Each structure stands twice: as C-alpha cells, then as structure tokens.
Amino acid sequence: MNKDILIANKIARAVNDAGGCAYYVGGCVRDKLLGIPSGDLDIEVHGITPDTLDGILDQIGHTREVGLSFGIWSLDDSDIDIAMPRLEEATGRGHRDFKTHVDPYLGTEKASRRRDFTVNAIMENVLTHELVDHYGGQTDLKNGILRHVNDESFAEDPLRVLRGAGFAARFGFTVADETLELFRCMQLEKLSCERVFGELAKALLKADKPSVFFDVLKQTGQLDTWFPEIKALIGVPQSPIYHAEGDVYNHTMLVLDEAAKLRLKAKRPLYFMLSALCHDLGKTVTTAELDGKIHAFGHETEGLSLIKKFLHRLTNESDLRKYVLNMTKLHMRPNMLVKQNAGKKSYNRMFDESIEAHDLLLLAKADFYGSVSNEKEPYESTEERLHSALDEFHELMSRPYVAGADLIDAGLTPGEDFKRLLDHAHKLRLAGVPKKEALAQVLAEAKKS
Image (cartoon, rainbow, N blue to C red; front, side, top):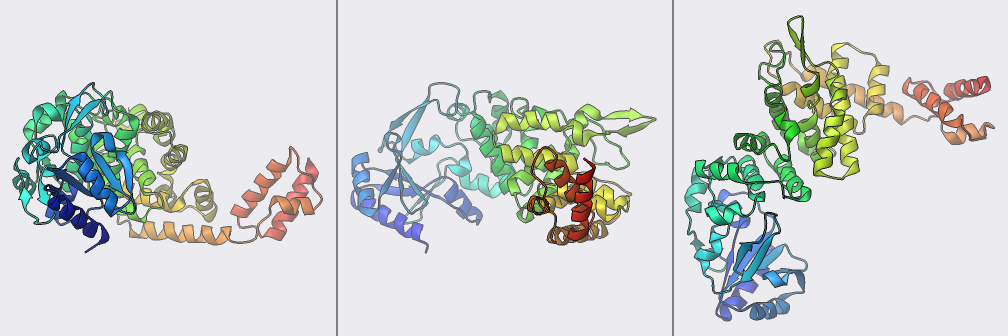
C-alpha cells in the first residue's frame, strides 16, 4: 500500500470518527475500475463542517492552500486533493466564471450531479470500498460509453467539450449521441489558451489514438475556434498513388497515431507530437493539379506561417515553436535522401540543420507509415540507413574541430569577418576535413579578405 493511500485511510478514519464520510471521486475511481494506474487521489468529504475537516488535516500534515474558500485542500508531500461537496453556479461563459457554494450536507447524489461524465461520477468509500453510482457510470464504463451527467451543469463549462474528446481518445470511449449533440451547442471562444493547450497535450501524450480527439471535434463542428488550420486539411486532395488513405486530414490523423507509437522514444514527446500534427499544414496552400497529377510542391516551407499562427494561438513557448517549425521544414528530407541515394555530406547538412535529429527520424517514420500506398516498400532498410547516417554524424561531430579560440591563437582578431570564417570552418567540419587541414584552409581564406 503506497504512502498516499495510507494517508487517505488516516483522513477517512478521522472523518468517520467525527461523524462524516470520505469518498474517492473522479478519475482515480474510474482508472481503478479500468485497471490502469492513476496519479492523484481526489477525496470528497461529506457530513462534517469545513472547520472540522481543516482541523483534521492540520493534525495529519501541513495543508497547502489550494482553494480553501472553495472547500479544497491539499497536503504537502502527497498527491492527494481533499474537497467538500459544493454547488457551482455559472456567472459567465468562461471556464473560471463560477460562483461556488460549499455544502457538506449536500448528499452524494447532488454532489456527483455536478460531475462532467457518468464514468467520472462514481464514488468509492475510502474505508469500505463500497461504490456509490447514482448515474450509471459503471454500466457506461463497461460498455465504453462517454455520457454527460446533467444537461444544465455540463453546458456551463465549455472546456468539457475538449475534455470529452480527450477521454474518448485516451480510453477508447464512444461518445453518446445526446452528449455529441450537447457538444455541438457549446461555445469555446471564451476558453483560455492555457486550458485548451492543456487538454490538447493530454490527448497527444496519453492517447493511443490522438486522432480520436480531433475526430470528435470534427464530428461536432468544434474545430473552428481553436483548430481552424486542422479543419482546413479536410477535403484537401492527395495523390492516390501515394495516399490511398484520402485527404490531408486523414493522412495527418494516421501520422498522428503512428507518432503516438513512437513518442516515448522522442527526446521531446509533446513537441514531437505537435510536429506530427502540423507537418502537412502547408498542403492547404500548395496543393494543385498539374498534368493530371496532384502535387503540393514546397508545402514543408509554405506551411511555416500557418504553423506559427496555429501555435501562437495555443502557447507562447518559444522553444516549442522553434522545434515544430524546424521539424516541419525538414520532415520530408530523411526519406528523400535515402530514396536519392544521397552522399554523406547531404545527411550531415540535414542533421546539422535539425534541432533534434533523433526525433526527425521518428517523424519521418511516422509520416511513412501514415500513408497508404500499394507501391510502398518495406521501411526497415530506409530506417537502417538513416540511423547509420546519424551515427556517422555524431561520430564526426565528436572529432576535434576549428573553433574561435584556434583562430585567435593563429593571430586573427575577432571582428566583422570572424563569423564568415567560422561558418567556413563549420562547413569543412561537416565535410569531414581533419582539424589541421581545415585550419589551414580557413587561414588561407582569411588572407583573401
């Protein structure tokens, strides 16, 4: 039994002695019933006053102020959140526009009525492990159905559309028809970019098939506000010779699901998944039919402005943007170099330009498997060649090379021409020229200026 469960039992016993009852609620109950690991433990305490609960928690550990005015506590050195039953009244259209009323005597039925989905409304008595399920969550969980609890309260929080799409992707749920209809009526404009990006990140990092997240939003007409660039992929044609899967949207979703199989190997998993999502946005502005064939020449560069706009809407994380833009620009090159039987210099230039070469090769693999073609050859030999080239590049970069200090030791003074000389030295390094020979060539170049 882990530390948090021991603490939860200690809290529950003290609450029980004070005349109340403690329940596990939300995702930890759902995940336990699904047989999957759950991180945080959420406990809801009924039947005692907030002051009494505050005193109990003070005896158990130092309390962090999560939201005491809303009846929420957290303990240091644990992943346990403790709350009291509460009613929430919408005061606006935003995710935080709620007025909260704490009511420890509300009862389990009314308390669980404010939950989003039936599978998240199941409660478990901490001490007896008895399940309290007023809204059929166990049946829906067994049948893989995602169904909202209450029309009125659900519609007050538009973030639940994204949460629902994320749950469908992460757990393989089918969204109930009545819940899909409710999704269609909800407005997402007032959501903060932080909350939207948070739900997107969960889907990209936790779902086996992140495509389901976007498919649910597509089905309910909810791509427009936050993901218009993804919506624009729908209906954009591709060459049936190489892309029998259909339009660019279908291809992107297949690539996204292939990337999900590889994300644990990526150095930056979230950045990698966003690159898979964005890699073909440029096809919306470059796709054309020439001589009866469909092409999207230059889409890997023409799409960069669209990606900037897309990412700017969701996050201000500059490193993420640089990574995704770099990956998109280069995503076609690995497989193309193999197909062209390119030499070492071409591979070295590509890897040198790449922010994260290891992840670039993963993206190239996902892109390959994300297309359906009868003419496709096995990828194993391509992958072997790429990784061999990357190993050779790493070995090359480990060799001694000409640096600024070498030029200074040779008598050169840093100035306007210094960068040009160092760039020349770097090109010689990528070409595999030994340091001594490269230094001689750089000094000879310096004499020309």
